[in-house]
Picture 1 (cartoon, rainbow, N blue to C red):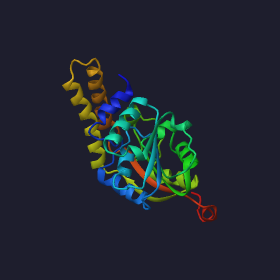
Picture 2: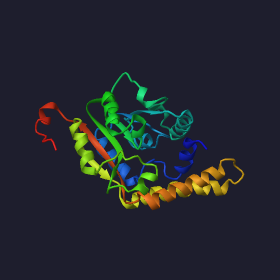
Picture 3: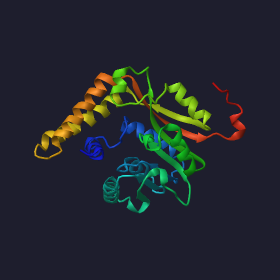
Picture 4: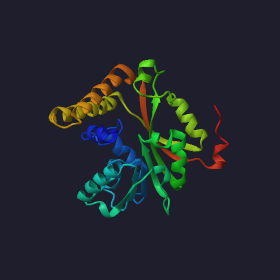
Length: 256
């Protein structure tokens, strides 16, 4: 079964593809969109959930989204048009690494999609190319809340993350200043994972004749086991608001 279809089915009841509550998403966007008239870019936009939330209630915001999967972009266009937002959003079905734009953006997002660029620091390099002077980056990625054991690594996570403090140090050393951050709570993680596994399991139970039903059911069971017996309370998720650090302030940063 195609991984993109699994993801689309599993996220049907939790459209933000990350362990964040609606309240957390709203708070992050309120802080990121203080002017209310920014141009927004989402790298790895999926079905456009972040873009929809950024535009609703902010009539002067304009947005673009990029995602590799053409079917996902097609669904995003339909949803955005149905909400009456289509005249303010441009979506691109292409590799986000190859995306170019004539103008830069006041807010660039990449939440839960840093793997598309090869990790956090390559993602920040891509964001830097698109960010207007004085703009804000909204980046969400994993970190280790505690040292991962083999069960966590066996759940499919390469040992690519670091602890939260080291993650922030790397971001700062790369020329960014965190101006806000949100660490997903246990409740947000549990809601996300129960929704992911439960929604996919329910789809399999409700569609026994579908040729993908068995694979969907197995994928949900495997994911649930990896979470409960592996990375729960070990893998964390943090969402940052970042600004570029001016050169005259970087001299005040003490390397660690």
